[in-house]
Image (tube, rainbow over the protein chains, first blue to last red):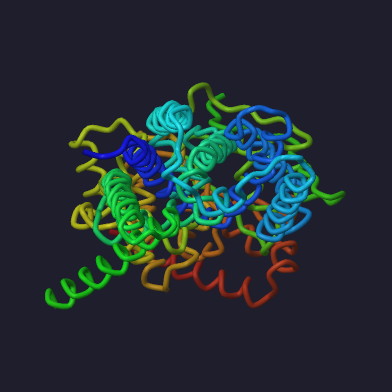
Length: 266
Length: 242
Protein backbone atom coordinates (compact mmCIF):
# COMPACT_ATOMS: atom_id res chain seq x y z
CA UNK A 1 0.00 0.00 0.00
CA UNK A 2 2.70 2.46 1.03
CA UNK A 3 6.31 2.62 -0.04
CA UNK A 4 8.71 1.47 2.68
CA UNK A 5 10.18 4.95 2.96
CA UNK A 6 6.76 6.34 3.78
CA UNK A 7 6.21 3.65 6.42
CA UNK A 8 9.60 4.46 7.92
CA UNK A 9 8.74 8.16 7.91
CA UNK A 10 5.45 7.45 9.68
CA UNK A 11 7.15 5.21 12.24
CA UNK A 12 9.79 7.85 12.94
CA UNK A 13 7.27 10.67 13.09
CA UNK A 14 4.90 8.84 15.41
CA UNK A 15 7.76 7.95 17.76
CA UNK A 16 9.02 11.51 17.88
CA UNK A 17 5.50 12.89 18.31
CA UNK A 18 4.77 10.67 21.32
CA UNK A 19 8.09 11.56 22.90
CA UNK A 20 7.81 15.26 22.08
CA UNK A 21 4.25 15.38 23.39
CA UNK A 22 5.22 14.15 26.83
CA UNK A 23 8.49 16.04 27.26
CA UNK A 24 6.85 19.07 25.66
CA UNK A 25 4.44 19.30 28.61
CA UNK A 26 7.41 19.89 30.91
CA UNK A 27 8.79 22.44 28.47
CA UNK A 28 5.50 24.33 28.68
CA UNK A 29 5.05 23.91 32.46
CA UNK A 30 8.61 24.80 33.36
CA UNK A 31 9.01 27.49 30.69
CA UNK A 32 11.97 25.74 29.10
CA UNK A 33 11.15 26.76 25.52
CA UNK A 34 14.26 28.86 25.13
CA UNK A 35 16.35 26.12 26.70
CA UNK A 36 14.94 23.61 24.20
CA UNK A 37 15.70 25.95 21.33
CA UNK A 38 19.25 26.44 22.55
CA UNK A 39 19.79 22.71 22.94
CA UNK A 40 18.61 22.22 19.38
CA UNK A 41 20.99 24.91 18.10
CA UNK A 42 23.91 23.31 19.87
CA UNK A 43 22.94 20.02 18.25
CA UNK A 44 24.53 21.22 15.02
CA UNK A 45 27.91 21.17 16.74
CA UNK A 46 27.12 17.60 17.78
CA UNK A 47 26.36 16.65 14.20
CA UNK A 48 29.58 18.26 13.02
CA UNK A 49 31.63 16.44 15.64
CA UNK A 50 29.86 13.19 14.88
CA UNK A 51 30.75 13.54 11.20
CA UNK A 52 34.31 14.60 11.97
CA UNK A 53 34.91 11.72 14.38
CA UNK A 54 33.14 9.23 12.15
CA UNK A 55 30.64 8.25 14.85
CA UNK A 56 26.86 8.42 14.71
CA UNK A 57 25.56 11.98 14.50
CA UNK A 58 22.93 11.03 17.08
CA UNK A 59 25.63 10.05 19.53
CA UNK A 60 27.56 13.23 18.73
CA UNK A 61 24.40 15.25 19.40
CA UNK A 62 23.72 13.57 22.74
CA UNK A 63 27.33 14.16 23.84
CA UNK A 64 27.41 17.82 22.81
CA UNK A 65 23.91 18.62 24.06
CA UNK A 66 24.49 17.06 27.47
CA UNK A 67 27.81 18.90 27.80
CA UNK A 68 25.83 22.00 26.91
CA UNK A 69 23.35 21.26 29.71
CA UNK A 70 26.13 20.67 32.27
CA UNK A 71 27.94 23.84 31.23
CA UNK A 72 24.72 25.81 31.54
CA UNK A 73 23.95 24.41 35.01
CA UNK A 74 27.50 25.18 36.15
CA UNK A 75 27.32 28.77 34.85
CA UNK A 76 23.88 29.18 36.44
CA UNK A 77 25.29 28.15 39.81
CA UNK A 78 28.03 30.76 39.41
CA UNK A 79 25.36 33.41 38.83
CA UNK A 80 27.53 35.30 36.36
CA UNK A 81 24.77 36.25 33.95
CA UNK A 82 21.03 35.81 33.56
CA UNK A 83 20.02 32.41 32.20
CA UNK A 84 18.57 33.70 28.93
CA UNK A 85 21.76 35.64 28.23
CA UNK A 86 23.85 32.54 28.93
CA UNK A 87 21.62 30.47 26.66
CA UNK A 88 21.90 33.03 23.89
CA UNK A 89 25.69 33.00 24.07
CA UNK A 90 26.08 29.23 24.34
CA UNK A 91 23.48 28.34 21.71
CA UNK A 92 24.69 30.61 18.97
CA UNK A 93 28.35 29.97 19.69
CA UNK A 94 27.70 26.23 19.42
CA UNK A 95 25.64 26.64 16.24
CA UNK A 96 28.31 28.75 14.60
CA UNK A 97 31.19 26.52 15.66
CA UNK A 98 29.18 23.64 14.22
CA UNK A 99 28.69 25.46 10.90
CA UNK A 100 32.39 26.35 10.70
CA UNK A 101 33.42 22.79 11.52
CA UNK A 102 31.11 21.38 8.86
CA UNK A 103 32.54 23.75 6.25
CA UNK A 104 36.08 22.68 7.17
CA UNK A 105 35.21 18.99 6.83
CA UNK A 106 35.85 17.58 3.41
CA UNK A 107 32.36 16.14 3.20
CA UNK A 108 29.36 17.17 1.25
CA UNK A 109 26.40 17.16 3.59
CA UNK A 110 22.89 18.41 3.10
CA UNK A 111 22.78 21.15 5.71
CA UNK A 112 19.21 21.92 4.79
CA UNK A 113 18.01 18.50 5.93
CA UNK A 114 19.57 19.02 9.35
CA UNK A 115 18.08 22.48 9.78
CA UNK A 116 14.56 21.66 8.60
CA UNK A 117 14.45 17.89 8.82
CA UNK A 118 13.95 15.29 6.13
CA UNK A 119 11.69 12.63 7.52
CA UNK A 120 11.23 10.85 4.19
CA UNK A 121 14.87 9.75 4.15
CA UNK A 122 14.91 8.25 7.66
CA UNK A 123 16.98 5.03 7.77
CA UNK A 124 16.17 1.89 9.80
CA UNK A 125 19.10 2.56 12.17
CA UNK A 126 17.65 5.99 12.94
CA UNK A 127 14.36 4.31 13.77
CA UNK A 128 16.19 2.23 16.36
CA UNK A 129 17.58 5.41 17.89
CA UNK A 130 14.11 6.91 18.16
CA UNK A 131 12.43 3.85 19.66
CA UNK A 132 15.16 2.70 22.06
CA UNK A 133 16.09 6.25 23.13
CA UNK A 134 12.41 7.14 23.35
CA UNK A 135 11.53 4.12 25.49
CA UNK A 136 14.37 4.97 27.87
CA UNK A 137 13.14 8.56 28.15
CA UNK A 138 9.53 7.56 28.78
CA UNK A 139 10.42 4.96 31.41
CA UNK A 140 12.66 7.44 33.24
CA UNK A 141 9.91 10.07 33.14
CA UNK A 142 7.34 7.61 34.51
CA UNK A 143 9.62 6.51 37.35
CA UNK A 144 10.15 10.13 38.42
CA UNK A 145 6.72 11.40 37.45
CA UNK A 146 5.31 12.69 40.74
CA UNK A 147 8.66 14.14 41.84
CA UNK A 148 8.84 16.01 38.54
CA UNK A 149 5.29 17.29 38.92
CA UNK A 150 5.80 18.49 42.48
CA UNK A 151 9.10 20.13 41.61
CA UNK A 152 7.41 21.90 38.72
CA UNK A 153 4.62 23.20 40.95
CA UNK A 154 6.91 24.37 43.74
CA UNK A 155 10.62 23.73 44.08
CA UNK A 156 10.93 24.42 47.82
CA UNK A 157 7.89 22.28 48.56
CA UNK A 158 9.57 19.43 46.69
CA UNK A 159 12.78 20.02 48.65
CA UNK A 160 10.86 19.93 51.91
CA UNK A 161 9.50 16.54 50.86
CA UNK A 162 12.95 15.16 50.08
CA UNK A 163 12.89 15.35 46.30
CA UNK A 164 16.49 15.66 45.08
CA UNK A 165 15.62 18.79 43.15
CA UNK A 166 19.01 19.43 41.56
CA UNK A 167 19.37 15.91 40.21
CA UNK A 168 15.79 15.71 39.05
CA UNK A 169 16.27 18.96 37.16
CA UNK A 170 19.48 17.64 35.63
CA UNK A 171 17.70 14.43 34.69
CA UNK A 172 14.98 16.35 32.88
CA UNK A 173 17.61 18.34 30.96
CA UNK A 174 19.39 15.15 29.91
CA UNK A 175 16.12 13.56 28.79
CA UNK A 176 15.50 16.63 26.67
CA UNK A 177 18.89 16.22 25.00
CA UNK A 178 17.94 12.69 23.98
CA UNK A 179 14.62 13.89 22.60
CA UNK A 180 16.32 16.66 20.64
CA UNK A 181 18.92 14.25 19.27
CA UNK A 182 16.40 11.74 17.96
CA UNK A 183 14.02 14.41 16.63
CA UNK A 184 16.46 16.21 14.35
CA UNK A 185 15.69 14.06 11.32
CA UNK A 186 11.96 14.65 11.66
CA UNK A 187 11.59 18.40 11.87
CA UNK A 188 15.15 19.70 11.96
CA UNK A 189 17.15 21.79 14.38
CA UNK A 190 15.25 25.00 13.79
CA UNK A 191 11.80 23.49 14.29
CA UNK A 192 12.26 20.97 17.11
CA UNK A 193 11.02 23.34 19.80
CA UNK A 194 7.77 23.79 17.93
CA UNK A 195 7.11 20.03 18.11
CA UNK A 196 7.67 20.23 21.86
CA UNK A 197 5.53 23.29 22.45
CA UNK A 198 2.67 23.41 19.93
CA UNK A 199 1.02 20.02 20.71
CA UNK A 200 1.41 20.58 24.47
CA UNK A 201 -0.02 24.09 24.28
CA UNK A 202 -2.91 22.79 22.17
CA UNK A 203 -3.61 20.01 24.67
CA UNK A 204 -3.52 22.47 27.58
CA UNK A 205 -6.83 23.94 26.44
CA UNK A 206 -8.63 20.61 26.61
CA UNK A 207 -7.54 18.83 29.78
CA UNK A 208 -7.76 18.88 33.58
CA UNK A 209 -4.85 16.71 34.69
CA UNK A 210 -1.13 16.53 33.92
CA UNK A 211 -1.41 12.96 32.65
CA UNK A 212 -4.23 13.69 30.24
CA UNK A 213 -2.25 16.68 28.98
CA UNK A 214 0.72 14.41 28.21
CA UNK A 215 -1.45 11.83 26.41
CA UNK A 216 -3.49 14.41 24.48
CA UNK A 217 -0.37 16.27 23.51
CA UNK A 218 1.18 13.08 22.12
CA UNK A 219 -1.96 12.25 20.15
CA UNK A 220 -2.08 15.76 18.68
CA UNK A 221 1.60 15.41 17.77
CA UNK A 222 0.85 12.14 15.95
CA UNK A 223 -1.99 13.82 14.04
CA UNK A 224 0.31 16.68 13.06
CA UNK A 225 3.00 14.27 11.88
CA UNK A 226 0.56 12.26 9.76
CA UNK A 227 -0.99 15.41 8.33
CA UNK A 228 2.43 16.85 7.60
CA UNK A 229 3.80 13.73 5.92
CA UNK A 230 0.82 13.19 3.64
CA UNK A 231 0.52 16.89 2.96
CA UNK A 232 4.15 17.11 1.97
CA UNK A 233 3.87 14.10 -0.36
CA UNK A 234 0.71 15.43 -1.99
CA UNK A 235 1.82 19.03 -2.37
CA UNK A 236 5.53 18.29 -2.76
CA UNK A 237 6.46 20.57 0.14
CA UNK A 238 9.32 20.12 2.63
CA UNK A 239 8.28 17.57 5.27
CA UNK A 240 9.55 19.26 8.46
CA UNK A 241 7.82 22.60 7.94
CA UNK A 242 4.69 20.79 6.69
CA UNK A 243 4.46 18.92 10.02
CA UNK A 244 4.80 22.16 11.96
CA UNK A 245 2.16 23.81 9.75
CA UNK A 246 -0.19 20.91 10.54
CA UNK A 247 0.52 21.28 14.27
CA UNK A 248 -0.08 25.03 14.15
CA UNK A 249 -3.33 24.50 12.22
CA UNK A 250 -4.52 22.09 14.91
CA UNK A 251 -3.63 24.64 17.57
CA UNK A 252 -5.56 27.46 15.91
CA UNK A 253 -8.52 25.23 15.08
CA UNK A 254 -8.89 23.86 18.60
CA UNK A 255 -8.29 27.27 20.10
CA UNK A 256 -11.14 28.78 18.08
CA UNK A 257 -13.34 25.77 18.82
CA UNK A 258 -12.75 25.84 22.57
CA UNK A 259 -13.26 29.60 22.81
CA UNK A 260 -16.54 29.22 20.87
CA UNK A 261 -17.66 26.47 23.23
CA UNK A 262 -16.82 28.44 26.36
CA UNK A 263 -18.66 31.44 24.91
CA UNK A 264 -21.78 29.34 24.34
CA UNK A 265 -21.58 28.03 27.90
CA UNK A 266 -21.78 31.58 29.17
CA UNK B 1 15.19 17.09 76.61
CA UNK B 2 12.30 17.23 74.21
CA UNK B 3 13.52 19.79 71.68
CA UNK B 4 12.40 19.16 68.10
CA UNK B 5 15.18 21.23 66.56
CA UNK B 6 18.22 22.72 68.24
CA UNK B 7 20.40 25.05 66.22
CA UNK B 8 23.55 26.58 67.64
CA UNK B 9 25.94 29.20 66.28
CA UNK B 10 24.46 29.11 62.79
CA UNK B 11 26.49 31.21 60.39
CA UNK B 12 25.84 31.68 56.70
CA UNK B 13 28.32 33.65 54.63
CA UNK B 14 27.66 34.74 51.06
CA UNK B 15 30.17 36.72 49.05
CA UNK B 16 32.13 37.63 52.16
CA UNK B 17 29.07 38.88 54.01
CA UNK B 18 27.40 37.33 57.00
CA UNK B 19 23.79 36.56 56.12
CA UNK B 20 23.43 34.87 59.50
CA UNK B 21 25.85 35.21 62.36
CA UNK B 22 25.86 33.00 65.46
CA UNK B 23 22.14 32.38 65.44
CA UNK B 24 20.74 29.95 67.97
CA UNK B 25 17.18 28.64 67.87
CA UNK B 26 15.52 25.92 69.88
CA UNK B 27 12.11 24.66 68.88
CA UNK B 28 10.41 22.65 71.60
CA UNK B 29 7.12 20.78 71.68
CA UNK B 30 4.05 23.03 71.64
CA UNK B 31 6.20 26.05 70.82
CA UNK B 32 4.83 28.88 68.71
CA UNK B 33 7.78 30.89 67.49
CA UNK B 34 7.42 33.90 65.22
CA UNK B 35 10.52 35.21 63.51
CA UNK B 36 10.37 38.86 62.51
CA UNK B 37 12.90 41.13 60.91
CA UNK B 38 13.39 43.58 58.03
CA UNK B 39 13.64 42.40 54.44
CA UNK B 40 16.95 40.73 53.71
CA UNK B 41 17.56 39.98 57.38
CA UNK B 42 18.17 36.30 56.68
CA UNK B 43 14.81 35.00 57.89
CA UNK B 44 14.14 32.68 54.97
CA UNK B 45 17.77 31.53 55.03
CA UNK B 46 17.39 30.55 58.66
CA UNK B 47 14.35 28.42 57.76
CA UNK B 48 16.30 26.86 54.89
CA UNK B 49 19.08 25.90 57.28
CA UNK B 50 16.65 24.45 59.82
CA UNK B 51 14.98 22.38 57.09
CA UNK B 52 18.36 21.30 55.75
CA UNK B 53 17.86 22.83 52.31
CA UNK B 54 21.06 24.71 52.88
CA UNK B 55 24.19 23.68 54.71
CA UNK B 56 25.32 26.62 56.87
CA UNK B 57 29.01 27.57 56.83
CA UNK B 58 29.19 27.33 60.60
CA UNK B 59 27.22 25.97 63.50
CA UNK B 60 25.41 22.84 64.42
CA UNK B 61 21.82 21.73 63.93
CA UNK B 62 20.30 18.68 65.56
CA UNK B 63 16.84 17.41 64.96
CA UNK B 64 14.72 14.96 66.85
CA UNK B 65 14.91 11.56 65.18
CA UNK B 66 12.28 11.07 62.45
CA UNK B 67 10.90 14.54 63.06
CA UNK B 68 7.90 15.11 60.81
CA UNK B 69 7.87 18.65 59.46
CA UNK B 70 5.10 20.25 57.45
CA UNK B 71 6.20 23.14 55.28
CA UNK B 72 4.05 26.00 53.99
CA UNK B 73 5.89 28.16 51.45
CA UNK B 74 5.26 31.79 50.61
CA UNK B 75 3.19 31.10 47.55
CA UNK B 76 2.96 29.03 44.42
CA UNK B 77 4.21 30.13 41.05
CA UNK B 78 2.20 33.19 40.04
CA UNK B 79 0.83 31.55 36.90
CA UNK B 80 0.77 27.82 36.97
CA UNK B 81 0.44 26.33 33.49
CA UNK B 82 0.01 22.75 34.67
CA UNK B 83 -3.57 21.50 34.71
CA UNK B 84 -4.09 19.84 38.07
CA UNK B 85 -6.94 19.65 40.56
CA UNK B 86 -6.58 20.52 44.24
CA UNK B 87 -7.32 16.91 45.18
CA UNK B 88 -4.58 15.56 42.91
CA UNK B 89 -2.11 18.16 44.20
CA UNK B 90 -2.82 17.10 47.79
CA UNK B 91 -2.27 13.44 46.87
CA UNK B 92 0.91 14.08 44.91
CA UNK B 93 3.69 12.07 46.56
CA UNK B 94 1.60 11.74 49.71
CA UNK B 95 0.24 8.41 50.83
CA UNK B 96 -2.93 9.60 52.48
CA UNK B 97 -6.23 7.74 52.38
CA UNK B 98 -9.34 9.60 51.35
CA UNK B 99 -10.76 9.83 54.88
CA UNK B 100 -7.75 11.68 56.24
CA UNK B 101 -7.75 13.85 53.14
CA UNK B 102 -11.42 14.64 53.71
CA UNK B 103 -10.76 15.37 57.37
CA UNK B 104 -7.87 17.72 56.62
CA UNK B 105 -9.89 19.41 53.88
CA UNK B 106 -12.69 20.06 56.35
CA UNK B 107 -10.27 21.31 58.97
CA UNK B 108 -8.81 23.86 56.57
CA UNK B 109 -12.11 24.71 54.89
CA UNK B 110 -11.22 23.57 51.40
CA UNK B 111 -13.67 20.68 50.97
CA UNK B 112 -15.65 22.68 48.42
CA UNK B 113 -12.71 23.39 46.15
CA UNK B 114 -11.13 19.93 46.00
CA UNK B 115 -12.17 19.47 42.38
CA UNK B 116 -11.18 22.93 41.25
CA UNK B 117 -8.08 23.56 39.20
CA UNK B 118 -5.12 24.77 41.23
CA UNK B 119 -4.49 27.56 38.75
CA UNK B 120 -7.84 29.30 39.31
CA UNK B 121 -7.74 29.54 43.11
CA UNK B 122 -7.63 32.86 44.93
CA UNK B 123 -4.62 33.69 47.06
CA UNK B 124 -6.43 32.80 50.27
CA UNK B 125 -7.69 29.47 48.91
CA UNK B 126 -4.22 28.60 47.70
CA UNK B 127 -2.64 29.24 51.10
CA UNK B 128 -5.25 27.04 52.76
CA UNK B 129 -4.54 24.30 50.23
CA UNK B 130 -0.81 24.56 50.98
CA UNK B 131 -1.60 24.44 54.69
CA UNK B 132 -3.79 21.36 54.18
CA UNK B 133 -1.04 19.63 52.22
CA UNK B 134 1.48 20.31 54.97
CA UNK B 135 -0.89 18.79 57.54
CA UNK B 136 -1.60 15.54 55.67
CA UNK B 137 1.31 13.64 57.22
CA UNK B 138 0.31 14.76 60.72
CA UNK B 139 3.52 16.71 61.32
CA UNK B 140 4.83 17.54 64.78
CA UNK B 141 6.17 20.84 63.55
CA UNK B 142 4.82 23.30 61.00
CA UNK B 143 7.30 25.65 59.36
CA UNK B 144 5.76 28.59 57.52
CA UNK B 145 7.54 31.21 55.45
CA UNK B 146 5.52 34.42 55.32
CA UNK B 147 2.38 32.41 54.60
CA UNK B 148 0.01 35.37 54.35
CA UNK B 149 2.26 37.82 52.56
CA UNK B 150 0.21 38.02 49.40
CA UNK B 151 -3.22 38.08 50.99
CA UNK B 152 -5.45 41.06 51.60
CA UNK B 153 -6.25 42.07 55.15
CA UNK B 154 -9.33 39.90 55.64
CA UNK B 155 -7.50 37.01 54.03
CA UNK B 156 -4.65 37.46 56.47
CA UNK B 157 -6.96 37.56 59.45
CA UNK B 158 -8.79 34.38 58.49
CA UNK B 159 -5.55 32.58 57.64
CA UNK B 160 -3.98 33.34 61.00
CA UNK B 161 -7.20 32.44 62.80
CA UNK B 162 -7.13 29.07 61.07
CA UNK B 163 -3.48 28.61 61.96
CA UNK B 164 -4.13 29.33 65.63
CA UNK B 165 -7.05 26.91 65.62
CA UNK B 166 -4.84 24.19 64.17
CA UNK B 167 -2.10 24.96 66.66
CA UNK B 168 -4.48 24.49 69.56
CA UNK B 169 -6.41 21.53 68.19
CA UNK B 170 -3.50 19.52 66.86
CA UNK B 171 -1.15 20.32 69.73
CA UNK B 172 1.76 20.87 67.36
CA UNK B 173 4.70 23.26 67.27
CA UNK B 174 4.85 26.18 64.90
CA UNK B 175 7.83 28.07 63.58
CA UNK B 176 6.88 30.93 61.33
CA UNK B 177 8.49 33.84 59.55
CA UNK B 178 5.97 36.63 59.43
CA UNK B 179 5.69 40.38 59.33
CA UNK B 180 2.25 40.14 60.88
CA UNK B 181 3.28 39.68 64.48
CA UNK B 182 0.26 41.66 65.67
CA UNK B 183 -2.07 39.03 64.20
CA UNK B 184 -0.53 36.09 66.02
CA UNK B 185 0.32 37.94 69.22
CA UNK B 186 -2.18 35.89 71.20
CA UNK B 187 -0.67 32.52 70.35
CA UNK B 188 2.97 33.42 69.88
CA UNK B 189 5.03 32.22 72.80
CA UNK B 190 8.36 33.45 71.55
CA UNK B 191 9.33 36.18 69.15
CA UNK B 192 12.74 36.14 67.54
CA UNK B 193 13.77 39.44 66.12
CA UNK B 194 16.36 38.75 63.46
CA UNK B 195 18.71 41.05 61.61
CA UNK B 196 21.57 38.74 60.55
CA UNK B 197 21.98 38.02 64.25
CA UNK B 198 19.32 37.66 66.90
CA UNK B 199 18.65 41.21 68.10
CA UNK B 200 16.27 40.18 70.79
CA UNK B 201 13.95 37.35 71.58
CA UNK B 202 11.39 36.45 74.18
CA UNK B 203 7.71 36.84 74.88
CA UNK B 204 5.90 39.18 72.48
CA UNK B 205 5.20 41.73 75.17
CA UNK B 206 8.82 41.93 76.30
CA UNK B 207 10.23 41.99 72.76
CA UNK B 208 8.10 44.87 71.53
CA UNK B 209 9.49 47.02 74.33
CA UNK B 210 13.07 45.98 73.82
CA UNK B 211 15.30 48.89 72.72
CA UNK B 212 16.69 46.65 69.95
CA UNK B 213 13.17 46.08 68.60
CA UNK B 214 12.46 49.80 68.71
CA UNK B 215 15.72 50.66 66.97
CA UNK B 216 14.95 48.14 64.22
CA UNK B 217 11.27 48.90 63.64
CA UNK B 218 10.88 52.38 65.16
CA UNK B 219 8.68 53.79 67.87
CA UNK B 220 5.54 53.73 65.74
CA UNK B 221 5.73 49.98 65.31
CA UNK B 222 6.42 49.49 69.02
CA UNK B 223 3.42 51.64 69.91
CA UNK B 224 1.22 49.79 67.44
CA UNK B 225 2.26 46.48 68.95
CA UNK B 226 1.50 47.83 72.40
CA UNK B 227 -2.05 48.56 71.27
CA UNK B 228 -2.54 45.04 69.99
CA UNK B 229 -1.03 43.71 73.15
CA UNK B 230 -3.37 45.83 75.20
CA UNK B 231 -6.56 44.81 73.49
CA UNK B 232 -5.52 41.21 73.66
CA UNK B 233 -4.88 41.39 77.41
CA UNK B 234 -8.30 42.84 78.04
CA UNK B 235 -10.00 40.09 76.13
CA UNK B 236 -7.99 37.55 77.99
CA UNK B 237 -8.83 39.02 81.40
CA UNK B 238 -12.48 39.07 80.46
CA UNK B 239 -12.39 35.38 79.69
CA UNK B 240 -10.65 34.65 82.96
CA UNK B 241 -13.36 36.39 84.95
CA UNK B 242 -16.14 34.27 83.55
